[in-house]
Length: 526
Image 1 (cartoon, rainbow, N blue to C red):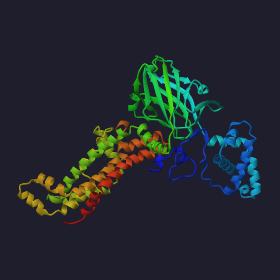
Image 2: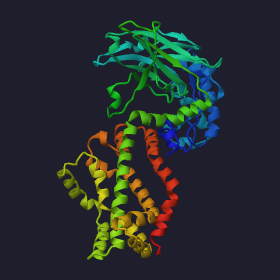
Image 3: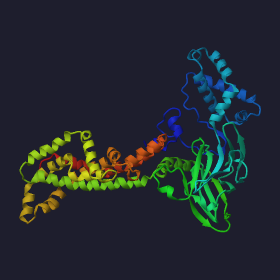
């Protein structure tokens, strides 16, 4: 779980499954060819075929003229050409019959050379190429008016560029965008892209800015700045250039959207400065994208924090946590009080039918919870408690049979002389219970408290049955709802699940002495 929570989607769904996450490698320059692509190469006879295929690909690239893929291959390093060859070999292995693959090596080599066409090589070069692309820029108003401020075919025009970078227009059949070509080899300076957008609505009605971005898997942080109405805004966190798939990055000011129960796929921007030097026209917005260079430790820090930060940003995590803590505290308090009181009555008091009642209570443990689920739900609905938190804690006031059994066994081992001495001193029923019994059963109470905490914290069925309002969800059901809405993000789910599991591990670690002591002393006689 911990390992998966720091992986990106490519490591989970692509290629062989690895326990250890991939080491992020910040790129010095971009575009570049990913040298780790198509590893490991589990193909028969790969060691013999790969060098021959590399030479064949190099020959095809030499005859490729000024085609973009051919120019890239001719200027690429040995590791980059090997990565392309691995991709071609894997693709040809899937297309070649097994009988041909197991044939004589010279014939197989000739066959692969023949099938390594320029079209296939160009496709594989595009697959291992990593490049930073900037597409359309859209703006949306609070009145839901949406405009294309920068069309994708003009994405490379109108930017003021500071730093070792330039924008190249790319016009393809699938998408038009601006390719950013940068080189950090001369230093660690930042790259700034600035432009002014003309809006079709008043700038004070601006709600969101959307930029289509294709990361280059370099893990460099990209930060957005706004200028409007004489105020400068800054994104509260950068967008890390992880993965290599196109996506839309949203930036907006804090507002009502932040309190809604839905996935929050936007980055908040906050005011950082005011002054006449900032853009103040009523219908213009000035945006600035700042790309900083990441080093190795910084890239690791960004990768480790990425899924956890997204889990905390995408769902109302702390609201779910506060609801779970509220239920945990009420259930622990109710369970400890009710179970200790009932156990004291069974262990120390004499009343008619005590043993029969105790046996009847233990017999209820044999009734499956599924049998009583529907009657219990009908009672809860009749009482008007449906879609409230009351059904999730009210049952703790009615003493669970197993906990009563544990406490009764411990109390029966307490010498009766202590109770008699307290009664001689004038203690009544309540004072004996409160001042004599409870201090002596602390280890068992601690064990029951841990059992209750784990049960309530991980309870999924109860909230699922009795709650329909997502604002009332505890953490367990909140993570499930998040999984339904964003089920493809396995790594983010693992991050949220690890955050949910962590309190249980911490509490058990610090309270294990009381837990073990309470369980072991329960069956001992005084």
